[in-house]
Amino acid sequence: MARVEVVLVRPDSPANVGAAARVVRNTGLHGLVLVAPGDWRTVECWRTAWGAHDVLEQSRVAPDLASAVAGAAYVAALSGRGRAGAPVVDVRDMGAEVAALAAEDAAALVFGPETTGLGDDELALCGRRVLIPADAAQPSLNLSHAVMVAAYEVFRASRRPAEAPRLSTHAEKESMLALLREGLRAIGALPPANTDGYFQPWRTLFQRAALTPKEVRLLEHMARKMKMRGA
Image (tube, rainbow, N blue to C red; front, side, top):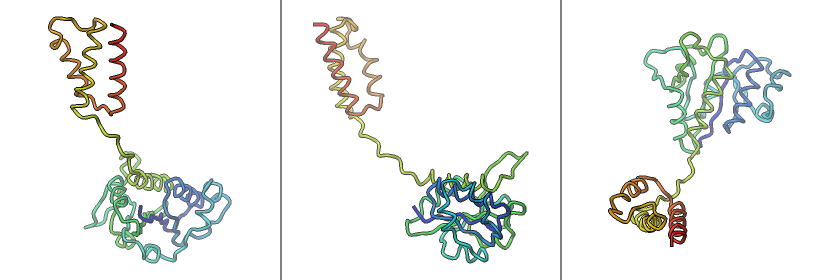
């Protein structure tokens, strides 16, 4: 995964700074950058950064946004404000774009002040404007909540699913079905007349099912036990 930093521009509330640090730790991002944060080292900040005090200690302070994102190959501004000509990306699509970056790349998720948001000049510095969908009756999110949504989408998109087990082949299922047919006949679940016709729904069921080789072996074991029981 790329080195992803959360960038808070002139945050008003030390509590949100601490909460953002906790989000960085929750989602495995690289770190936190504070642009002109003012007096943020307060007890409230440390309290809301539960389990992430190291993120606060290692946070980087920058004088302006340009300095904060200078090393980033991908810069996304989280903002509900429009800017002519700027592409607007849904936050989930942004997560996928960041997850697709090379491990040696750096990305910055930029958030503006709680009361005013990012200015036009600051939005212009960012290659993406990212929107977090919300109900029209209350479209504004708390800063720390917005950081959580954006960081989680990056985290979610960056997770690689476990490799799926191999599925059984048609021939492997047919071998199992031959045993099952005999087992069902042995216990009287299939009639001696027109056996194949009555067995057809069983064949359709198991050929349609996505069975692993282990599951096929379990069914074969069951079929053998049925045949022994009916003998």
